[in-house]
Length: 109
Image (tube, rainbow, N blue to C red; front, side, top):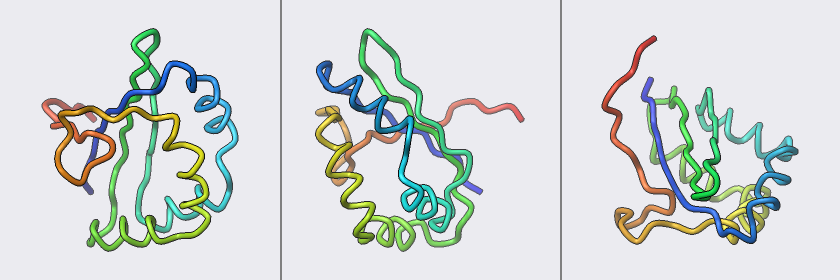
């Protein structure tokens, strides 16, 4: 199992849209996330800075393949077409990232 954390901004005029979308995530998207071996997935919003912090646990054995499967899914692409315009990525994110990955520096079970 691998824990992951990530961060991104939210466009100030899209905060309510982002909240509304995530109050009713499509069942197909939720199922895909589970089939891609992601568990305990949470997104937090910090206002007024409009930052999203996401955390999850990856329980699979081939993260790249699972993420490729997620990205290729037509329903997920439709979901992303609604959520991505709400997001404001950091200029400092690594090449190829949308959400900026974070280093885990502490954990307590």
